[in-house]
Length: 258
Ligand SMILES: NC(=O)c1ccc[n+]([C@@H]2O[C@H](COP(=O)([O-])OP(=O)(O)OC[C@H]3O[C@@H](n4cnc5c(N)ncnc54)[C@H](O)[C@@H]3O)[C@@H](O)[C@H]2O)c1
Image (cartoon, rainbow, N blue to C red):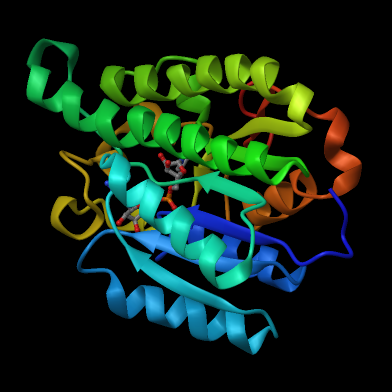
């Protein structure tokens, strides 16, 4: 990847939290930004694009759902139509789900895996197809979690959906390295975003989010602002990060060690 050509990024779940921070950090690098999020987040999405433009980058928002394959195809097609290429896909959208294993239903499983895992797979798949067509490499980046490295009580669905991101990321990295496309994921600890501050199902697309009430998650855990993840993603998108591939990078203030 060259820094002299203009590059474009799609960030799913880009209306708030980590997605917003990643969008703004990549805008700072001069990357064209497309923020993708669900219906109802239009005002927040508009606000992100205003901040992107204030940084001198171009951008637009797209309303869609990461579980719908056509929405992913459409946002990629629109990105390429507007900016000429897709170079970075950040499959960031996700929901938190806190429920004891004894209460989990197939509906819960399908919803959590639909957004957290299928959503990432669809983003990787269609972004890779576009990047292969372009022939100039690219960056695929997914959202895992420290819950994707080690199980947490009352989070079997969330943790398993985030463990799966590591598998998809490793397999895709092996398949795509011949095309100079790297595939990595971030595995944050507690990051101060609406997911944690306002675990509100209706607002954030989640179900049964009760992090603040769960002492197992709070104890001994430090937290950080979403900009720390924005910095990591910005690094992964640099040409010199070509040698980092297939990794799920823990970023949690030293809580969990691989
Ligand atoms: N905040 C944390 O402490 C933390 C820790 C580890 C991992 N993560 C992961 O990082 C990612 C970002 O988390 P966050 O804290 O910024 O969360 P957040 O809830 O603040 O933002 C997530 C965004 O994803 C969007 N979204 C939900 N379902 C969607 C769908 N079907 N299609 C498109 N967009 C959808 C939401 O509308 C929301 O804007 C998530 O994958 C999350 O699981 C978060």
